[in-house]
Length: 409
Image 1 (cartoon, rainbow, N blue to C red):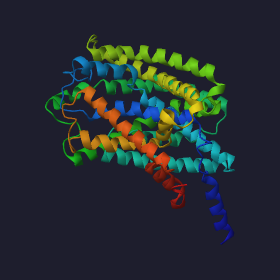
Image 2: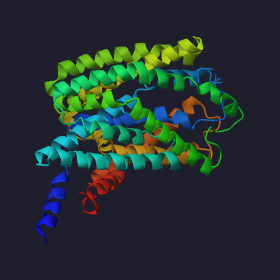
Image 3: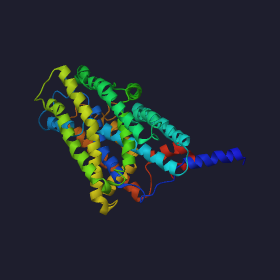
Image 4: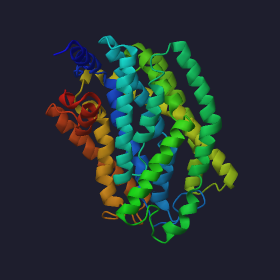
């Protein structure tokens, strides 16, 4: 072998992080990811519902009783909370990968090269996910945002703080208002939904076209408006602070952020909850402001939830990876498989190109299906854990990122 080829092989080998053992893994991040997937399932299932008229606020106009209450509770506790949690943990994961590669002697350019390759493959997986299964995919937008974040992961703490506050102000004043307007335009679909139509059309080809267009729009929104950048930067800082890796050393701050996060969570989502209950019917402008408040509060609430899961991990640390903590951690280790698995379960059941069970389905029934899908992925993760296997999509992403010889390592 030539010296040039030998050097190339050695460089690639350095880029490939060795598989982390269960003993080396922190429990808190895995529990947070596993629990976060329940939030994602409940938040996403609403996009599969059709055949019901919407009111001017984008809620099902015919929801009554327990069905309306279930939707209100989702608005109070989960709506627009899963995306911030996902973004924070995504940034945290990027920081973990970067630190592990640096510890193995990979230079900064090599670290960025790996992270860039992984981000592009996430974009590709996300686009396929949006086109084939679920138009509300978030992987592509996060992968596109990751292409920006990878340039920040090795900055100093001071520089990261400047980026955090700068992007946060921009997102709060520019990005979120635009997103709030988009979310408040649900009534534009009212006529088609009342007629029993699905916004993506009834044919599978229409669904694919709609999903690809939505994915492209989501990536543009994420990059131009830096929608997830402050949260991902926060995830990098979270890794450096050690809150999740060493919760026992950070109990005071974890409790403070958890409690304050839950206060912000409830107060910021209360206006849209009252709208969902039908007890408050504000004008369009006021409804947009209420949605903006929910989105802004949700960014901090995401922090609160993650800190709460870290506190649970600390409380459960004596039990290790057994019982419920072990099941959540197993799913958290396989979060990509869990996320895509939800779509593999729910899309064929609910979409018009599948069994079409989403036609006229109420909120309560939809949330039951979402919880069922999450539980199914939880059981699958436990089975894989007991057999010492990675999730299939984790294997695929690792193989695409590092090459065919590193898929299962």
